[in-house]
Image (tube, rainbow, N blue to C red; front, side, top):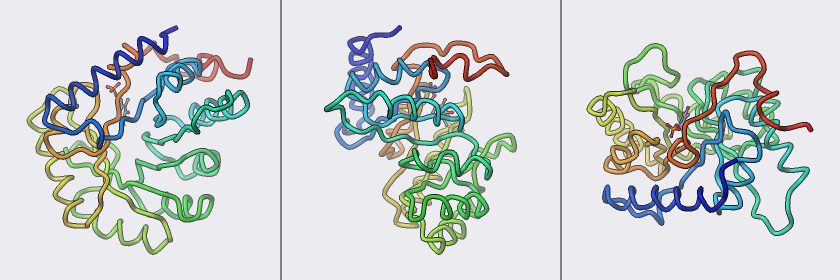
Length: 236
Ligand SMILES: *Cc1c(COP(=O)(O)O)cnc(C)c1O
């Protein structure tokens, strides 16, 4: 199990990378992506001072959040859970008690479910700016309308999120620049761009929030397709 000390030194590395890319580490929120790791890694991340944790799968977020909530050490700041994965309408109810920021809202149907189970919740619109059909996200041309629709549902739209193109930093930079230009145009302060492999690109494009897993915790353990919860070390 990775130690809080090790995570803390990896966190220093993330802050140094942000600074070297011309960013201000004090004004870029670091979301620690704990997906595929047991809940004890989330505990170690919290002990290392991280307060924002991200997950891609609804059941995994729910299980870890519930486990942390029932064994919360006194004096530890409350974790802010970020949902960053593909969001299915039928998972919103399960997630609603736990999620502080819904980062991957990409269509009005999902917004309606969030407004129903978590009225007034803070959300980001995920933008698919790399033109990859396999990716989640709202097409850039649709983003202004979706932002307006989510506002009309009473949700608090705080910004935009985007995922770069794997192995293509030039295309990633284009996508991030387009995302930031849209956020500027719409007056949205939060720009969630940059992961372990494209952190610097995100920061140079104006990131205010990076979502990092591997740089903090190392390579993720393989994820068995059908025994996911068994891997989490929760419930026992
Ligand atoms: C997995 C994931 C991350 C973190 O990726 P790393 O390469 O481990 O930093 C960030 N954002 C999303 C949407 C992810 O799926």
